[in-house]
Image 1 (cartoon, rainbow, N blue to C red):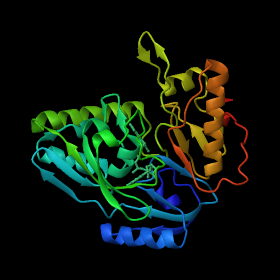
Image 2: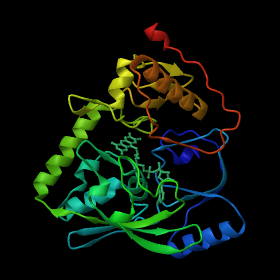
Image 3: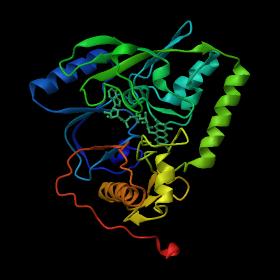
Image 4: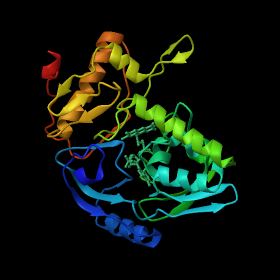
Length: 301
Ligand code: FAD
């Protein structure tokens, strides 16, 4: 699975399947169900940490299949395997605005819907009209916005076993120059604050329900205040640039990353008194995983 996650870690799945269309997907699901093989779908693997032992059962990846993008007036219909940036660029080319706020999120439409991906400038749920989903028995249905249970960084699809095939997104007409400027501005803001071009899954934790002067506290700020920047376990390190990001350096294992995440959570609890909920999802067989101890990188000692 290391070839299919942005951490570039994780052992093998028993079966790895890439359906090319809806019929193919439905047939696969029916066969897997008959054989009693558990199924997990992934998009671009940018919010998951797969164990070093890998995944028992089948993994279905909808990228690069299911990547069609179409337009119906101000509505974009995007396949679940299309990458967010591809859909944003398609929309911009058709003078449609709304998705710019997701610039730089390296996920697919399916992953973004399930996680309700977003930034300070908005979340994908604000644009979702409906999603077409298929259940593990192969039944296809359309769910409208109200039936998708969107909350901060989650939806009712998460863990439900339902697979998103496509989504209808309502955008608004915009000036091409303004859309382009906004995309560029948000891209620069992201690169100035977050590590880029490295092995990571973005924010490790969700922002907690902690408010100071009416402003929600960022998990990254709490981790920074708890003095966790730069600490590492094996090849996993708390980013110096953004404390909520774990960077996988050469030789990093999933066990290193998970241990570091658990240590960061404990550190924030001990130092700041707040319990952070994981945003990244641990997948696969974690049998025998033991939390390892943390160290400062040699240059900081
Ligand atoms: P995966 O990681 O492959 O899967 C995530 C979950 O979605 C899993 O539970 C999976 O089973 C499920 N899933 C995926 N596709 C489907 C489908 N078709 N049907 C049903 N379930 C599905 N996230 C943000 O919200 N905001 C950010 O600003 C942000 N910045 C990031 C920056 C970096 C550098 C990185 C690496 C990650 C960042 N992320 C951010 C996290 C991540 O990109 C998002 O959560 C993204 O939406 C995950 O999409 P994915 O396709 O990679 O999903």
